Length: 392
Ligand code: PLP
Image 1: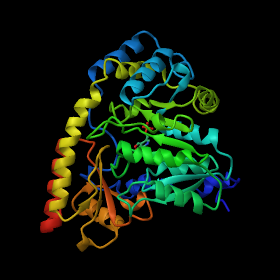
Image 2 (image 1 turned 45 degrees about the vertical axis):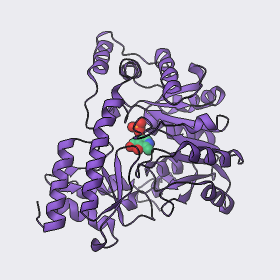
Image 3 (image 1 turned 180 degrees about the horizontal axis):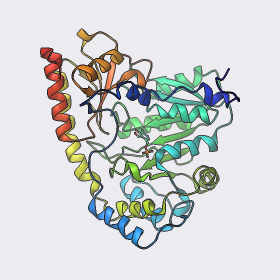
């Protein structure tokens, strides 16, 4: 029963707050915290991209944009992602521009799901997926990857599908993964694709971190499964443009046309100014992810090495900008209590593993997206506190 005078939608009323935002609210009032929580790149937007955004303002680009996405941006996106992901999209009807991948996920779920449909979500996973799924009337079927190096395999997919008690409509795969940084080799992806091909389920692939792959070339699942895949990507992470809110859905043009109707109802169109900036990012700013990747790789190596010295057992990340790590045994199994303690006493904020999966309560996630200085200072504080008990 709702506490409100008039009833609310019961689905919304029963929704729990996203666990990441919930934890953040619990530590909000602590002074001098270094935030290693969010996936927020610490780089400024590239000057060449900013220059285009400024010109757009001066040219009064203040009107509703094309709701599917400005034609020049969609052309640039098709060309960019075809080249970078080794894909073969034919033209601008194969892509929809959304307000970040966040809106893209809602559009996809609302387009393909009937009430009560099951969606397999490998866990640990990015927690907002669950909220979007619930709002679209879907039901999560978790696939625990924690006992298999945090990867899905043909066997775990088969097992999850065969044991599901509700119809499985889709699987949502994210790689390089948040929170683990895990990604897949071509052979692993091919084996996963061969398995999924045998089942009539949609394959939603969130590849927002693809540009941040540390070794080897990123292969998109869309390349291996064009008939049943929907590809989500965007500029938040690759080009440090989180606030510009630019995402892309790539799929068969007939499906894109259906999704456009949902997107028009949710957002109508993405900001015209931001689309102009996004065009610049995919053309003159094509090299931006390269220099960001160099800096992230250095930070990753430094962070993983220091964590091991401190007794943590980190998953070695192959992409994205997070380290997911077991806490040292001497601190027990409660990653939530550990994260609160670290925030209060070392003034370093990290996220508890339980925000991403019930099976990883003894883990924390550390983001190294923010800056070299923050990371260095945070590790100094952690060392002082965890090794010598010195509170900051
Ligand atoms: N998907 C994953 C896996 C993410 O980690 C994030 C942000 O952290 C998003 C989607 C949201 O991205 P956007 O800023 O494009 O909405």
